[in-house]
View 1: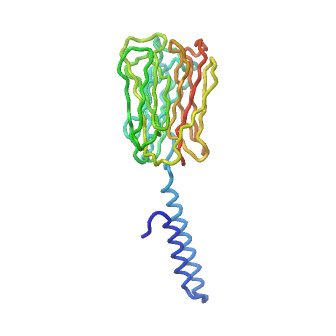
View 2 (view 1 turned 180 degrees about the vertical axis):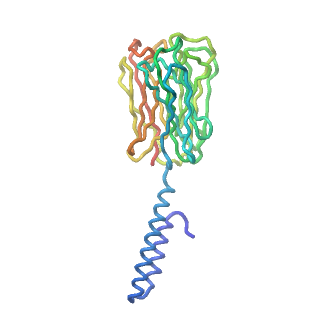
Length: 315
């Protein structure tokens, strides 16, 4: 009956115009008041319906799933609620004082509604118990949502990085990463988002490996009509201790994805990206991003910096 834009306003004006033709006797005044109340209710319903339909990120939430508490390599998946899909991935290692000795090797979308996270203990094992939590940022499907991936060649080198770019006309909303055939000897050092790309980097630890391994970057992209998309980054100071940073979305914006990167990590593979944890709480949207030295102590002789990023858009 009406076009979407301004339809509720035109409906109210038309209805009031019709009511204005009712002649002012007592019965007709009562009828007019009754009709006006009904019109006001219909107008409110239309207004709320349009507001809901115009929401930029409907259904936005974070879900998680956690492994048992033990000392074994782990894989865990988590599914988004029905009607929603992952826009971003994250993870958290719990229960260990030396989380730097546990390497996350996979954090990706797996299937239409799920996120998969995998982690291994450093070469030689780890005596403590720990848990692995997979995190999925979920929303109703965004316009044009796709995944684009990029993989390095397989080789035995101390470092490798890959960058996946969103197609023209799209922007980045989430990130994912994989280390392929790295065994228990390769750790993630960066999952770094920009407006339209993600860079994933990894490095062999001090024990090294002769295996031919590679890195795969996953960019989750949506139509560039998504309002208010931006990447917010915060960084730590350049010191020798383990670090956590907490980038947060501006007021009125929601978190769709996240990432982190270690700079100046020196020689020998001493530092791993141990936590990418998205948070939605009481209307605030942010992330915890953590990096730790592999022995859980300040063994790295180089001062280093941790950067954490969140990908935000208008709610």
